[in-house]
Amino acid sequence: MIAVVALLAMTYAHPEQLVDTDWVAAHAADVNVRVVDMRQSGFADGHVPGAVALSPVAIRDAKAPPTFLPTPAAFDAMMARLGISNATRVVVYDERGGIYGARLWWILNYFGHPNVALMNGGWLKWSAEHRPTSKETPSPPAGQFTAKPQPKWLATASDVVAAIGKPGIRIVDARTRNEIDGTDLRNIKRGGFIKSSTPVYWEDLLDPQAKTFKSADEIRKLYEDRGILPSQEVIAYCQVGMRASVDLFALHLVGYDKLRNYYGAWEEWGNRDDLPIERK
Image 1: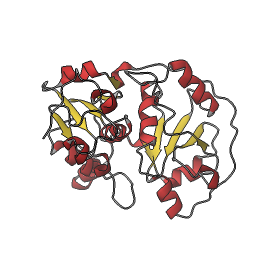
Image 2: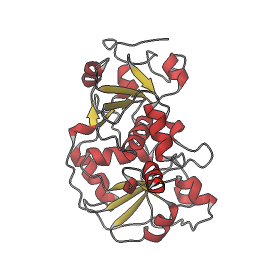
Image 3: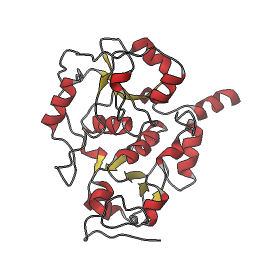
């Protein structure tokens, strides 16, 4: 009985959203699977065989504030070009442990497609294991994707303002300490942080060398030690919604289900004079 309890304590609540390299090697060519490479560069030099490329910046529309979301029609077309349909199992990887891939995980969930996973360890692990690579650019048949927006995954600036100091809601800041302290502005007009927010830097969720996600127990402890509990609603933010998506991915992985991404992020908050900012 003790062994069973210990095993359950180590188990992810949503293990289907994290697959290992063995699984990808065995299933990348399946008809109902699409592997997406979201590295910043290097696709032409070699990638997971059969993977299609998607730029990390493609899924955030810089010309569409305040949400910065692509329209459902634009997202439909983007997925169709990649050969992704509503029934497709999507598996994403990048070269940094999920900072780019997690944003696609989040936005697919927002558009009603939860059948998406990250390849644990990403390109770093795939390369370290000397697995086969390809330089071919696949041309998959066009997919038939219909976006079904799920507003529960998205927070706006007004939602965040309403959440400040509110019992039952926790605001998570996935940025660096220098950004939070206001010493690293990153071309944003104002530095600081949102009142009542709790810092959880996205890389703290990963093994520092392998860039794989930490165990379920380690992830749960990291959040619970900071007072972030499964019963609470969580709104995460960073600068452009990438690092926040890693926090949301990890939280969902271990069983947190009331999750929203403030996708306007500090790019909106720090550039608006009407929104409150705290400084150390």
